[in-house]
Length: 186
Image (cartoon, rainbow, N blue to C red):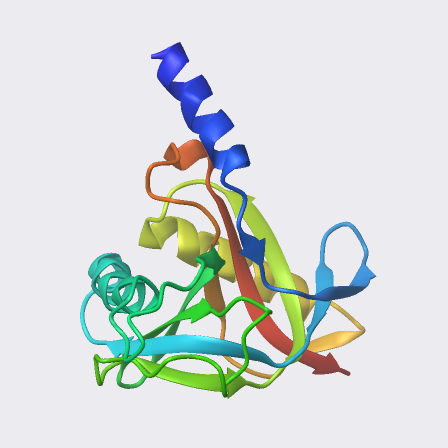
């Protein structure tokens, strides 16, 4: 078992993937505030239960980056994969590698996958380790909201997004996750 864990850790580091670009603009130890520039994403809307939508959306989005597009082109995987609740279901997004822009990305063959440039913004971020269960997400989301409600400098200006950074092969206790909430100065 120890050998398998070591191999997973080594493989995880050896297969480093590009992560979304951001700049930390404030960090008081309890709360990190980040500025994200605009970025190109592939996204899909999925209806269903919290625990199921990530898998369903991942299949669609992975299909796009692994060649299910009009150019049959493979596109590098990036991190994080984000998930956000809406009135219509959950929007799940893959960030496209920074080398790409809207003009050079192939068109998805799956009509439920959309490619567009998402606006940047300022976000309060809470990073945590652990699995992908809804209870853990809700606990950390509530923790970030509570921190923001007591913060004199920043106020919530949008809906939370859940960001997952690791492969499902990574043991759950080693997975890195984040909650991002749009904020603006008070």
